[in-house]
Image 1: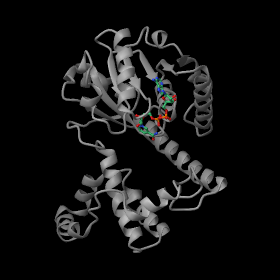
Image 2 (image 1 turned 60 degrees about the vertical axis):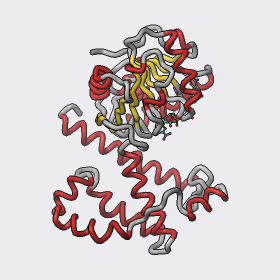
Image 3 (image 1 turned 90 degrees about the vertical axis):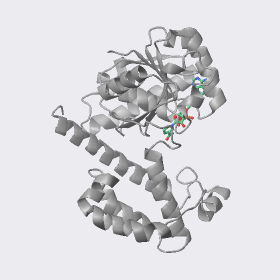
Image 4 (image 1 turned 120 degrees about the vertical axis):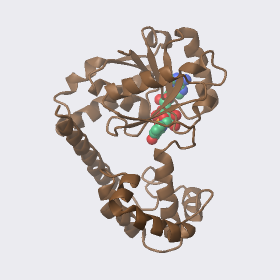
Length: 313
Ligand SMILES: NC(=O)c1ccc[n+]([C@@H]2O[C@H](COP(=O)([O-])OP(=O)(O)OC[C@H]3O[C@@H](n4cnc5c(N)ncnc54)[C@H](O)[C@@H]3O)[C@@H](O)[C@H]2O)c1
């Protein structure tokens, strides 16, 4: 089924989701609350597309720009829509207000998907006239470079909504996974934060330097994880060995119930990372750009590999 997609919100996620859709050669409408926001989003899209051209992921920015149309009038933005992706701030009341407006403008068979980082789809659908069409599609940042999209149905989401959503997500060359229970953090963030909790605990206890803790991941499991996830890695390592290690190690792993002392202290001083010039590390703009560029280029190389594997490079 072909979907006519409208993305609502032009921030970090909204504009890169629109780019991801256009990169898959599908038209997309991007709705923003003001002309200024739309101009900023358009600039962001073009800059990102230029870097994709440099890395060989796209022949020319003109391959994607005509596929994206920009609106600051919600009614017009939704006129032909069949599938809405909401990417506005992570505030439940703000999202509910928007859904109420949307539901007064679209027919009942239009899917409403939220890009929420962790709000439960059942809570998002509260008060809706048609909870059966609500679903979460959790794109990862940057949405045009990270393939995963977690699809999370709520208690009242019908299977037809799940199937239509999965088909569309796969149709834009994303890797769709369906999270069958509304667990907080879905799957990706649960795994990411399990690692972050242990890293915090090791750092706060002075077991190693921050550089060495990071290197223990980037130079070891990080090298394998692009191919073998945690369960498949265990198959390769040998489940008997992984069982024995689980049996003696789990008891010693961090069981922190919230952010650790070190993280709380950094945040209380305003040291929030690259955004403030200091987090666990000290950052100047050149260093930050260096790491960001290196990471972006590697993500693009992964995408090129994916395309080569599929034979459509
Ligand atoms: N930033 C991330 O890394 C990330 C990753 C995954 C999911 N998410 C989730 O995606 C959603 C969007 O996050 P973001 O980082 O893009 O936020 P953002 O703050 O960068 O952008 C939000 C945009 O929504 C606009 N907006 C506010 N109210 C609106 C309304 N009523 N109608 C239309 N637009 C409105 C804002 O003006 C802004 O442009 C959130 O639910 C967030 O939790 C974020």
